[in-house]
Length: 547
Image 1 (spheres, rainbow, N blue to C red):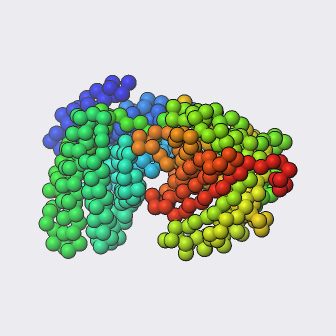
Image 2 (tube, one colour):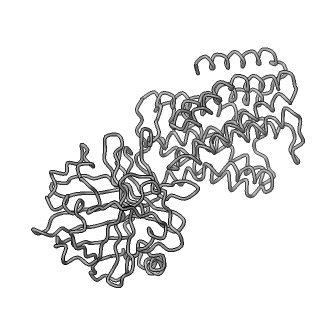
């Protein structure tokens, strides 16, 4: 289907060149090149990524309607009837609305997928400026050439660079924090540059400088990332190397405009920043990524999140206040540790008391000692004040051991959205609520995960933990594997969507004595450890348990 549309696009482009060769400008040819080749070229990367029926219906419509929209874009320049360009603009607007729908419906807003969808949103800007040029609209103080070059910019840099950046994010295994910062700059630089061109030459120079720095760092990631195909790697790295050169010329041009001492003319920039980018940046990158064909991290995932959000205060009576309790009786955090089995985890290899603790949690006494990292202690004091009043994740700055009193209650699965949900409510000796955590277990792609939701004010935080056996010890961690496979992670859910947080945690549970376990809970923020909680877990009889 797409190959046939590519042939149609090639015939349209050659026909346009043949008909308009004496009159066509380089900039007009460039914008038509993007419309006829590069726009359909990215369809495999952005479509068929979600199982949503609404998304699939829209994607089919975009593929079927593309030749018509592209044909009218060609007619707008061949006939000089600007109204034809309106069809292309409307097509790009619907593409942008589709991207917004994807952002709204996606469970987890990963930065790389957001980057891909932002490219579609910016394409609508290209459609508008193309229509403005074809319809001879007067746009502020801009002349026809500047309007056309703006259309070119939005059909190339603003549209395609975020998509290629998103594809890079799908295969990156290291430097994720650096990648996130680079992506943020790439996504918002087109807006800053547009504001600078319109209102401030100083802002324009600053915006182009920041954008250039982000692209240089992007190139660093391209040259340090492992690719599946040698040909794909060579083409993508060639594209990135040429882009570093062309963006430098853009900086030289912007600085010359700022100083009112233009070094490069607009016509020179059309060839350097337009023609070279089209054939030596965009084209190699598109072919290279088509060879690599990266898939999103969440492809095939069936993860679900709790629909129970908190209010201003959580506390131990939170479920009753939300009428979210059920009559189900649970003795442990999981019914059977075997439900978490995978190639990395066999529950029978653990010390016997570890599965017993998770399956019969109410038969164990828990003591804890909280240790905040030195660099975080000033923030921890402020955090403690808020957590006490919120009644959730209330970890003291006192370094002494203290006892946790536990209660396990059933949770209404219809309100929560997950299956066999139970709440583990822990309080301290002052009867202050430490945790109200909603536990569930699920399987995805042949692996078991522990899904722990912590209601927060008007939101919820979920830790998806993958289990491993380490000799006779149990490891539960949200830290992603180097392969980036799996569902593990810590996520914040709000009404606006679900977002991965720069947090990670690991539990190490091991047997100490005949009836005692020890556990260590480490947490990291942006890869820097800020919290360690030690637990002493002792098997007790029911008669000794506080109710």
